[in-house]
Length: 352
Image 1 (cartoon, rainbow, N blue to C red):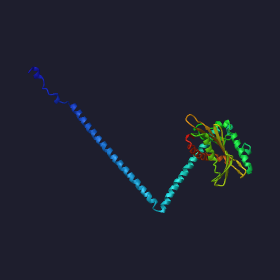
Image 2 (image 1 turned 180 degrees about the horizontal axis):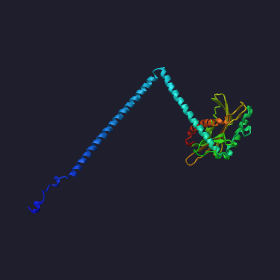
Image 3 (image 1 turned 45 degrees about the vertical axis):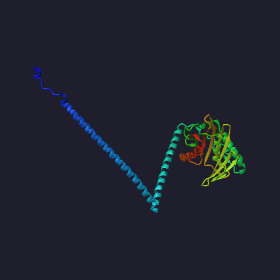
Image 4 (image 1 turned 90 degrees about the vertical axis):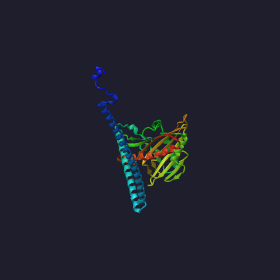
């Protein structure tokens, strides 16, 4: 043994000795691990309990729905008093629908009045002209004579006059896409009140233009001469006068014509404003032009339907104009839906 061995303290194996810091760290890691496991188990337990509660709630909801249906069937079939209750509920729903419809109608009227206000700020009187205007035209081009022997010649004259109004200016008004509004209000010469309403129609279908035009004309002037509230008078194969009698007994007459050309067809419709046979003046002046053009290309046969209609309400006051023209636009929207259904039969590509 050397002097160094005597003076040196006894040595211990490093594997048997651990510092206090290492011991504390090890204990902390163990506690953290145990805590994480405890939280994990707790979370899994909560999730399982929530899933059990959700399943229970779904089962109870199904049972409640079944019970309600059972009670409803039982209540409906139990006594006449319950039927009256059901009828009362349905009546309330109908009344609520009417209230909502009236609210939406007033919103549209407000939008129309606002549109008129904007237009008055920069109106050009040259835009106020109608192509068939009973207020400016000779009365003979808006009148059906009382003598039946003169009516056929008058129908031909009225149809020819309307066809002659189909000019390049009007052709420029025809829409060539589905974009844009189907309605436009035109103000009077002073830019104060509504003079008339413009309506636009566009469609593109996969069919020969002659077939589409023929279907349109037959829709307006069906071959069966007598129908519910309607009689037809034909002048040749392409001119027809329809006489409509409403539930209130009011008589309305419309004149229709179709003409075929090399690459297009023209269908026109117009109201008879002065009906001397029945002594009736129409409540509105309507005139429309529909062009059916051949748009066939490498993809196949196609036809473009382009329509322009003017409508002027005669029996109305400035205070009621916005409301009355709004009603016209609502009816026109419904009629347009019927036309679109008819055009869908040809295989429509685009419709407004």
